[in-house]
Amino acid sequence: MLWIWLAVAALAVDLLITGFVLWRAYKRRRLLAALCKPLAEAQPGSLPPAVRAYAEAAGGVVEAGRLIRSKQACSLRFQPGQSWHELKATSQVAIRQPGFIWQSSIKAGPLPLISVVDAYVSGQGLLDARLLSLLPLAQAKGEAADLAEAMRYLAELPWAPDAILNAPGLTWREQTDGSFEVETQTASGPAKVTLWLEETGCRVRAENRPRAVPGGTVPTPWEGRFWNPQQIGARLLPSEAEVAWILPDGPFVYWKGKLLDYRIET
Image 1 (cartoon, one colour):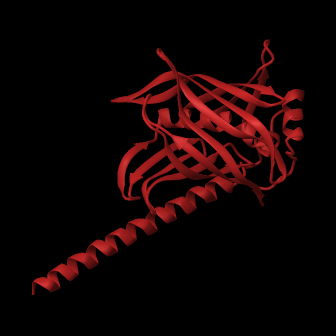
Image 2: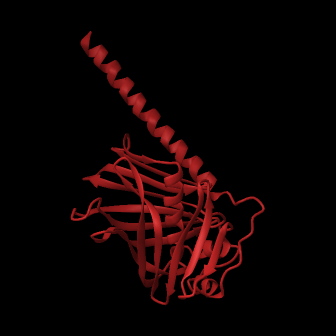
Image 3: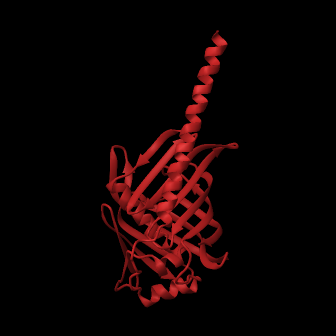
């Protein structure tokens, strides 16, 4: 009889895992559907001429499709001095509303050891990291996630020229030093970053992006840079990027990546 009970237990575990995987797939489909939905009766705001010129030079067009889909080769580390983890990622950026979904995994051989979903959809941020796609490692939502993920979206606009031209809900302000501040409203208030647009790429900075620490988050200066323009698909884009927290001991670069593929979907 023992083998029967073991078989029943194994079947129950298999059904539980299958159900969880299907539930997560359903949640991802709902998230993507919300990302692709244009904001109702919303029109893009006015753009400073230099911002419009940057987007058009990259190949961005008005009345583009609904979604930008790209593939990235990335490196990630969690603490200063740690070794880098190599991973592949996919990014989906909305063209008709502020928002993105970024998915990646750190593999152990052929198996996804750690899977990560990072997103900003409908004014709300989300982080979900899991071990073997099942066990929660890190999860974030609420005010800090809303602001942090919105700032990530704004900082990556140099990779989304069509969103610059078409996304409503973005407010641009030219600064006296030639930079541009771009802001969007989240479910938890305004989020903004500063961009320096250059011929060879751009730099971005947020003065108070929420950074995860034991017990919560702390507002921390955060910077990124994009460089090495290349023709990728139908767009001329900075092909490489990196981001860093500006800590008391100096910049901590924790992510760097390269675009591998880029396409616009209707």
